[in-house]
Image 1 (cartoon, one colour):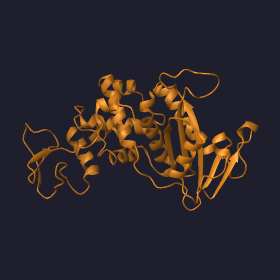
Image 2 (cartoon, rainbow, N blue to C red):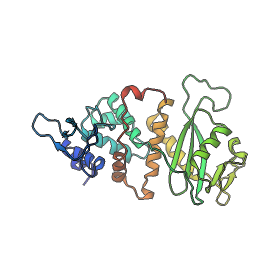
Image 3 (cartoon, one colour):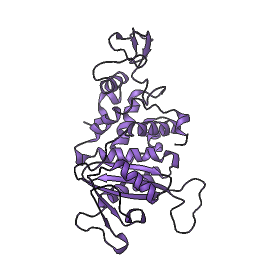
Length: 305
């Protein structure tokens, strides 16, 4: 039987119950006042599905308030279908494909995708490599910055991303305005534990020592060197290959102001991959754990970050 045959992908009541079980594991909580003792479910044919009333502040509410679903007119079961499709597609799924599959407008599908990526964004994270773990650092360039023309053979016209990966564990990506020794060092010092063993290539940003880590080894790609003992950045190169295939082959175009959300999507799928014991169903459930407090309006989705 297909996973998509589950009731919460087709029935609105079951969909609300599924989301409530993730957001309120101990029972409904009023998003207006935080009350939970005097909360009751409202009934009747005229009442919206999943509506509760808090008898402490006297206000009605649903599980959608304060989440990425707030003020959305898309049925909850279609939201769950969209989340599953994005989570189970290794290189992502385009807004056009969501539009055709879910039967919503292209504009709605595009906005749903960005709300789901917002739920995938991680908050404050602990430093990587604690206890002597290997952390690889590298940068990549993609697309073109708006209003910036290509000059010579450099990467000044491209969007810039720096990623860090702890071998066997998680990846963390940061969109950067520019890549320089100072910006690279700031990222490493903010995200990598002093006990970590840092591995990079010999790009000019990394040649000078002093990143505050236990040790730092480099491989010289310009001389055809890719592995020297435990010195390599192949883990990160593998991640970048998936990211670029998705961005070029599936999404095809991305404005710089939206790139941080696409990076969050690829980071999330990598960090919750099958190799770490997380399947498509579990990955989709993890998205629901990140929907609270991340409401994104259509106007905000166009704002610069």
